[in-house]
Image 1 (tube, rainbow, N blue to C red):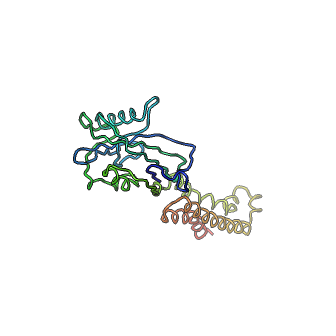
Image 2 (cartoon, one colour):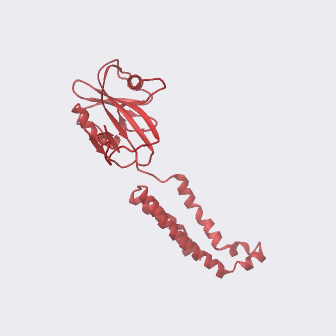
Image 3 (cartoon, rainbow, N blue to C red):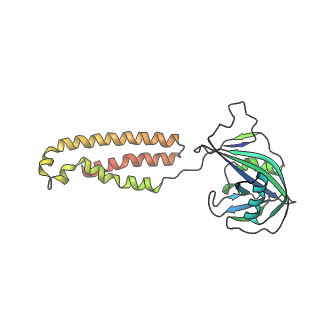
Length: 256
């Protein structure tokens, strides 16, 4: 969610009170032709995206001091004049964190534009701004930037796309042998623990296997609900749901 200012203080659209809060600066450098200077992030949070310049404050800094420092560090320009034009409040759906961003214009500056370790600067006209490689929501408030004004708008956008972790993939890949061993212990214990294998009859093992199938089905349903509520794409929901039940089903067809 992006909130440009906050005229909704006493309405249901008000920004929720969050326990975590971070203050940032954002400097939009404009030339006389109304072109905007953006930087391609080379590392860290937002890597690969085209962004304005700015960042977190250092201890003891004012907001304006932090803005000037970040601009010089990231692209080499020294701001001769900064004009505060607005405030962005950003809340990602999967975070209990408010990103409070003070936004500045910078039309008077000196120095030469240089590429830093963090940013690769480049000028863009209004028609060339690469919104497809920028943060979601930038295409909404950037036009207001060029009009030299911010309006009162509340904008919601989806949280960043989620991807299955390697740990989860490996967990599911290697879990089916454990399921098989637990369902057919008599096949593996008969040569080593004969007294115990006599207790684990095929009838008992088939019962335990059918029970495990129902458990797999229940896990698949729960998995689908959790993925859906967390905002996963339908493709990802289907992937994890099928994978959860798959290893039970395949084991049943192959080994029983």
